Structures are given as C-alpha cells and as structure tokens.
Image 1 (cartoon, one colour):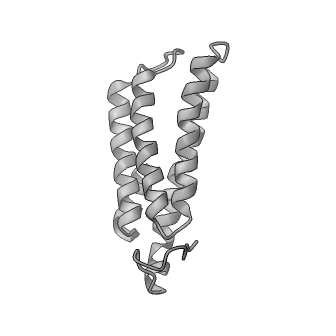
Image 2: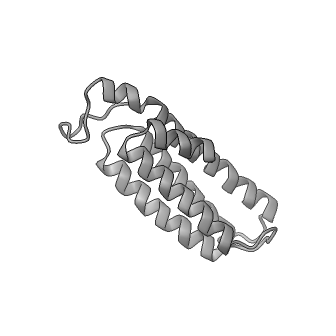
Length: 137
C-alpha cells in the first residue's frame, strides 16, 4: 500500500493522488474500527468502505481515464462482500476476510496502474477538462 501511495504521490496526477489518499485513510480508519480475527460481519468497516465507494464512483464519473472505473468496481465488490457475509452467515470468516483482501489488492493495483501511466497521459497533453467522452486508458 505504501509503495502504491508513494507512486501516486510522485508520478500521479490529481485523480491518482486523491484515490491513494482516500485508500490510505480508509486503511487507517479500518485498522481502528476492525475486530481482528472476528468471523462476524464488520458493520463499521462496511460503513467506511461504503464512503470509499462513493468517492471512487464520483472519481470514476469525472475522470477521463479508465482505471477509476475498475477501482470503483473492486470497491463495490468489497461492499457487496460485506453484504453477502451479512446475509449468509454460513460463509466462514476466513473466506470473508480473504475476499476482502483480494478486492483491496486489486483496487490498489488499479491505482498503481493509474499512477504509473499518468506521466504518459500528461506527456500526451490530455487534461482533466478534455472533451466529454474522451476517456483514455
């Protein structure tokens, strides 16, 4: 996480920096609110993840790049995993926490991709105020 956030700080533009800062804040708040090794649904963590989802969806809707769509999608999967675990208590805690980890890593990977490719987008002269519908990779 620190590598991706550092990469976003050094190479990223505003979108990458905002996503990395929000993810880092989500991680810190989750550390405070979570109950380690608990097999119950963690409602406080779900609330924090839902706030991150709203931010990522807003970022994806205003960005001219594709990576925020994937990051928002993986964040949606995190929230859906919380809901699925709450609805089906037969799923053990190990599967619940593993799914959360996988979606989190994939979301971080998309932010890292966005930060890594940001200088190339900047060199191409594409700005955030590009024509509507002009989404780049």
